[in-house]
Length: 104
Image 1 (cartoon, one colour):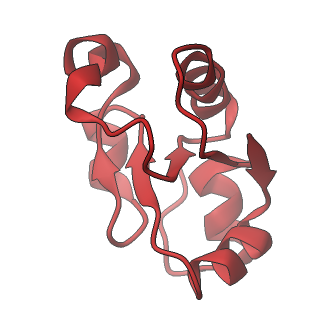
Image 2 (cartoon, rainbow, N blue to C red):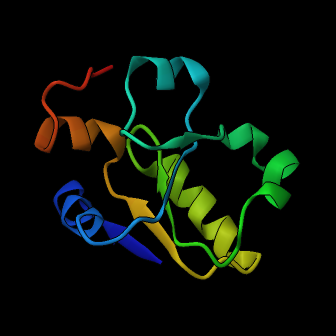
Image 3 (tube, rainbow, N blue to C red):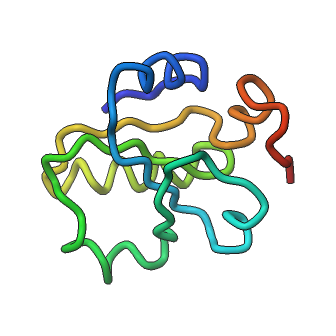
């Protein structure tokens, strides 16, 4: 698993197209989210795990990087092998990359 800062992820996304999987709740998503991300709240992952491709490179995103790290560890334990966690979450992204993004 990679644990990338917002700056590192921004640079990585310039040349790569992983699945951006946001594991926050709908109300959080509605406040702000990364462009092209897909919402799958943490509590719904087990019910939807079969819809995800274990071989697809996946960036996990949450508010501060804690929930996404938990999901990343779970994904690795069940055979996902190309996992990236956004260190600091959307909060860090908004503070360092996109100052137009809402903070909460």
